[in-house]
Length: 442
Image (cartoon, rainbow, N blue to C red; front, side, top):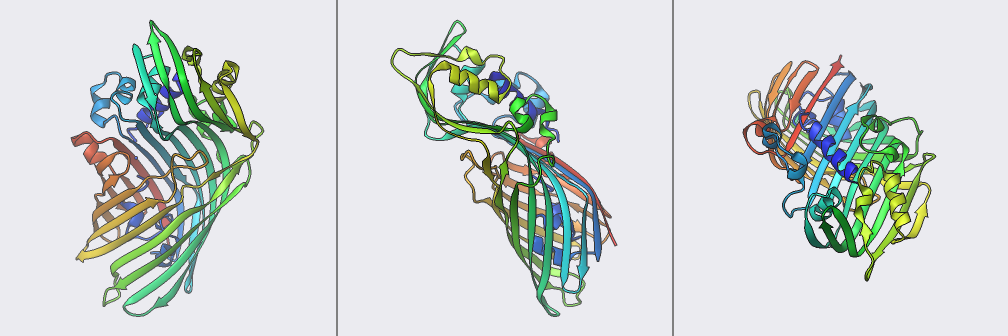
């Protein structure tokens, strides 16, 4: 168990040099397939008749404990993560947008897209329980929690079919609607959760015991992640298990045009994304709910988790302890997608200067065991946008990591940027990200 906690933290830390997906460029005036990932109705504003997406990738990391300066200054980052009283929250979110194609035809625009997704999370992990498992404190601590804490990771692939149509257009206004239907390919999954955990952990000369404990536990796994979080190759399973899920994005878009029809004064949109779920069906699939009960003079030896690096071993230790009873078992299990609402407005300020306001609000509860995660984000992006190039600086308020600021640029179909590099370098930002991509329009 300690190895899983440590490996999860190392995964986040090692990725901290590379974080919010395509922040700033996903609302660019040079409209393309990337904009449609925020709102499918944006396809009606495609800058070219045809667009081919070659490659886009983004890696996002945010946490509420360690900063970029902590990494630069060195020291024991594992101890830094689990110090204090605040529960640990970390999110790793990686996305690869693969080969994709879009085309206009009269008032319609169509697109076919492909993508691969990775999510890994520490969600509301109690520092006292984590430190007990890590064998990193001496003494006793009483724990009484009213929430669910999770260590969770999953991978999947998507193939999307999008359509957008101009509903109304004149010399001043333009209204469009769009939808994306996604085929979901569940890859791999692992979840360890303890809901409403209570108990006393005691460490005397390295002997760590749990007494007077109760919790509702969930242990779920499918595919390669059942074998552990420590091997990065366990996160590269995307399309191999077939189609076992569907999701839908729905959106609307409005443009208030310039009088000479050279562009827009305002481009605004609203979308609901990721409405759907996927079912994991691998040969090693299992999802079990347990009740943990350690009462009276009983004690659970937590040293047994030392050196354990995969979910199946953790489950076996729990079963062998005699302190858990199975409430229910499911062979194939369903995971709901991270449904969220996106709203934005890009305002033409003067000449080539624009300002974009973007809001992302999740409509799911990350603490539920059958849900993938999402973050609440508000971003303001000033940009200097010419026909063939663009420079912009996104500034965000993120649910997990707080305030971040970054910079990016576009040259033709190539772009490179970060939503947090500025704050990562000048203050104690707890987020870092980077993205790049290339697409061709003709």
